[in-house]
Image (cartoon, rainbow, N blue to C red; front, side, top):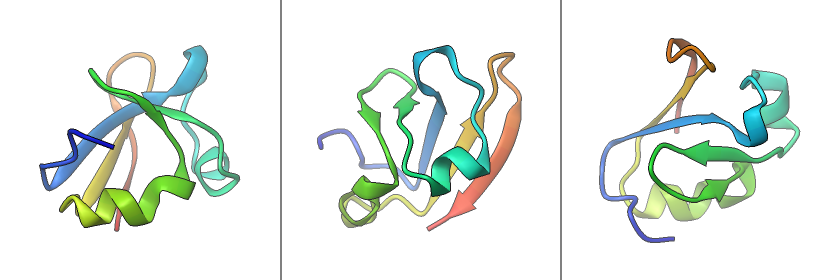
Amino acid sequence: MAGFNTGMLVVTGAYGREPTLADWQAGKDFKIKGGPYFSIRDLAQIKDYGTEQIVFLNNRGFVEFVEDI
C-alpha cells in the first residue's frame, strides 16, 4: 500500500460505519482519510511504512480511539 509515510494515520469507519475498537479487532474495514480501505490484516505492512499510531475519527470528525502500533 502506498502512502503510509507518516508516523500517524487518520482513519474513519468504512461504508459510513462508526469506528469501534471491537470492529478493529474483528478485522472489519476502515477508510484512510484521502486514501484506500484497510483493516487490521494490513497492520504489518502499515508498520513497515513507518506508521506508529492510528487515529480513528467518528463520523463527526472527533477522535473515537487511538491505537499505538
